[in-house]
Length: 637
Image 1 (cartoon, rainbow, N blue to C red):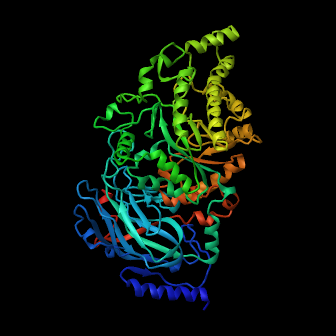
Image 2 (tube, helix red, strand yellow):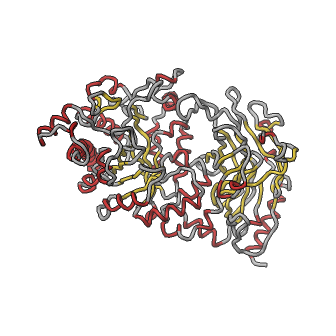
Image 3 (cartoon, rainbow, N blue to C red):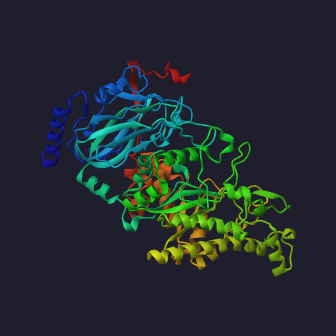
């Protein structure tokens, strides 16, 4: 028997002695070290059959935090059985008055393992069930929201593992991480009860249960250990941008939770986080004169985004400036953080919230439609509007951010038919732009786009001033694309440059003048960026020093499909990827396991077997002592 196999037998014996058969269930031992694939095409780890389960969660501490009935302030203990393992899982309900306590569970396992989390997702309409886990030495919790889709029933064609469709009669095994374990406790928590609204309408993520079924640890072979070490981000693989579009305020209500938003980026291929700092003239920091800090409140209809205001209210009470904390933590884990803005207009009826006092106070700067009517946005043609944005950016740079990001994928166009725009065009060309038709109107499109370019030039000058003071070049990122707006601004001539100009994006001039470092293409004409779009836009930046990124959609995909599409995008000319709603993606660790390594362009070719391991569906045989016969189980009706 080899030393490697013998040491694993010794580890198994010591583990049982330390923890007892009730807490750790040991799978059968297989001395062969060979990769295998099961009948569903899902690749196994080489030592899959040596998996160790921590399945009796009733051994969690303190015992006072557990109960059989799940009374408020406790975790409900429920027995279960699968074909492979039996034990006691935990459920926690929301508890506004009596917080559900953190639990500690001994995990006396040592050495390199692939760690999976078993979760039973109850069928609750459209609501993720948030569990939080960390080992004792982990710097922050990992959040686990639902991956895949839970249904009342699953048709035969949806039963394949890669479909990620299952029922509440299943346990989902989600890959968490590959890690060198040292016998530490596992700390178990659920999202603390507080207002947590994803959008408007008061949808509260806490009004649902959270579950943890078991922890599964698979020993890694020496080859797999090397593979996991190679997956850590290196300078040459840092080809990924994160972006949260201020969505982090959907979740974060404390300094610790802010760290939990950024911690998953540690050791990943993410080089830079486009941190949602502005929405219109609202800002997510407190040292401001140019902007306004959003506030929460009881009236959903008069707030721009209540959940953002509630988040800032929490930080105000704690005396913590979230931008200062975000910059500090990002830099501590080796990530650049740049302040991101959406040039928002008001929310549509029935909501009355506007994007800040500056918008309210200056109706004279409204963008004008071709028919002469005022729209619900401000025009970049007015120097006063651009100056106000620049004042905001100057404040953010004072916090030490590494640059500015313009999210131009929403709220376009940015220049219309305002009097100074029309008159300056008429003076230059002797033409009335309102009478021009495609393609003769391209001169006016360039004229309109010129104001956006002027804005970028002004931002670049601001970044140079601050960069010279710091002794570095600060970054400017711009995202373009997005869902086409209503007529008359939809693309009328199907040519990439013409189409970009219709939205106010004179990309070639931005590149020629080296105004930007990063160009991101958001899905535009389809639900995902197309290969043809990548070939066209990447050609515009090739050799310029500007990096071209595909904003990778859909946000939820099986890991192997992500890998294949990434390779196709690289082949078409992409330099890297942007991950819209990174704040959502990092909370699905089985998917994040592949998103985080997409900068490993060369290794992706060989990682097909790896990506097939990140998500498994395990049918339950019994739950709470009841056999799970789908012909009568409650959720089938």
